[in-house]
Image (cartoon, rainbow, N blue to C red):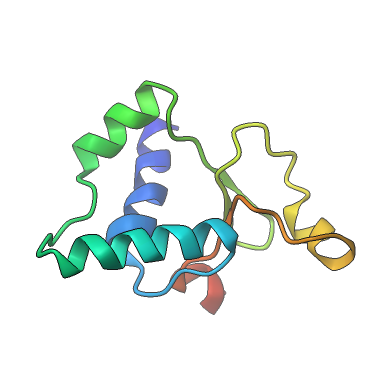
Length: 99
């Protein structure tokens, strides 16, 4: 589980060119700022693993293919977007958008 969690965060921070969803847009803005400062990798896999192990980063794969960064996610983000305000923890990567 730890490895797949790090894989998901690595996809978000270092692989995906485009992110959407409320949390995705926040991460994309931070990522753009860091890359503009000359960084090539926003967060290394070791950094991500440390954050996951410390409980500072968690992620849930949604039925729609996106992710939720809320550790208490009930996987309802994709359903509540239809009737309520979009989930503020949702991230959609290039890969998820293509599926």
